[in-house]
Image (cartoon, rainbow, N blue to C red; front, top):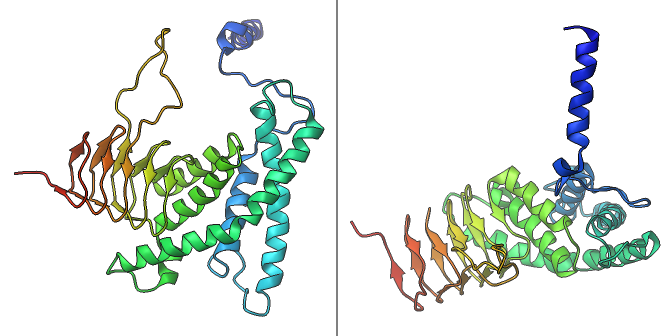
Length: 296
């Protein structure tokens, strides 16, 4: 191929890739003064959060009772700084106030939201401690809480989810979903940050679990691998587009066990104390303390 032919092909390709009609919905125009969200920095945020919440299991191997305050102090300070930067990026990415955002105002708002998230870390740790206990007590193979924290994918997924959920409650766009999708890639557990999950929650094995955005899960709930808490077909608007923001995922009340590969779809309620067997489809409410198994 001659140089002239190569130049012609390259020019034509660049023109086609730059054409406005080919970029519709696929092009994010950078705003002056706003950084882009960084997956590398978000990964560090996740690592720092795990290190702060579970000291000695992640991050510094030399942490002990004499140095823990120092290590947590350094970690929290850095976490706040990184969070503020990424929240700032997320606010700019999503239009801080619905119009052309002001970088100074968004930076101030990002700092405040980052500080509020840091202030919520003790409560996040307290809830995660109940999740550790649920995983340990629910698995005869678990030899210690330390093994659960260090090895069980559910704890990595829940650490990400519980941080992301707090960011979601603070109204931070984009960033919560990035954090939970990182856990999805790492563990195979897909939890939407908007889902509401109570204390003492666990997932045995975990791979293939899906928990949708409008799910409400009570306390002392246990899922097994492959469980889907999803939506049925949802209504469309006059233009044929899905109507967003409506409750469309299950409500799981306290003390429910859902076994592997069960699928629960739609805004149904699984009552307190129910047991859903493996490989079952559920699309209707279940009364409290009932069981549903696949019949041979």
